[in-house]
Length: 312
Image 1: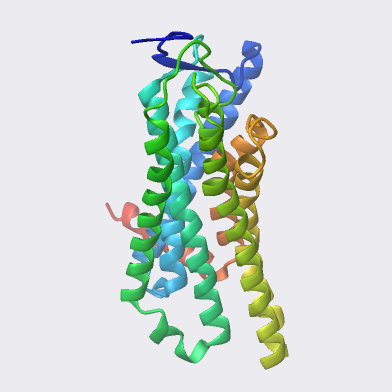
Image 2: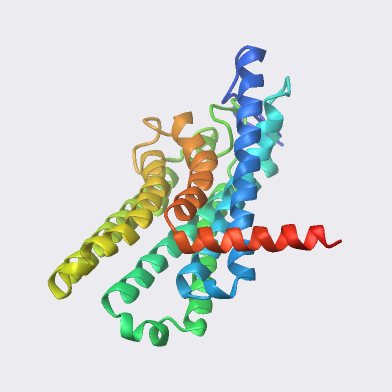
């Protein structure tokens, strides 16, 4: 198929970490270690929550789902990025690029919703502790998880149906470590201003609004606790601080990548790396280091495994 501007593009060239081989080798080792630690950390949280009877509260159920989504987000892009660091030609097919964008926004939209659900869970636990188990029933939790995946699917499909049929021809250089909507849309050989504004509204504005709503909800929780039980304020603040850190790490890069006009921050590789590589690693660290109950459960699980292996 030919277009006015040239032959149809069959693959994109990724130039995120082009440079001398020593630097690329350094990045290869660094990101390989980070990805391995991310997978191990998140799997450990999932297994610990599933295997330990003391972690049957809604908070840990949601935390296990968050770890799964974190692992999915980084897996959608990081293995390909690591492989490309050792490849002379860093390319990805058009359909591979589309798949990468689909899963990035699918898991990202689901995690965005799940973080809102986790904020609601903390509101009920702190402000309505006597009704916590009744309100946050297993049925409601299952509905929340299904809702998060559904919203993630709607979020990604609403953008991908407009992107997948774009004609790409001529220029095919993606100045990033992976395919993402703002950069790929700019390569289409038709006018895409309307689609660019839609992506800004769908991903950027939505991320910004959700971030503000989450911060407002945490503020409401703290104000409510301060008025009803001032003595519990420090404990509530300690509990919420981990959530606030996770929310900031997740939504911060999203806002800079998607909320600003195309061309301003769309090609910023630092935000792209932070969003897809660093944040999924920091989430399990934040939750495990600040949660004594989780640490105790992990030590118990480790002791059981050592005891099992020694008896073989």
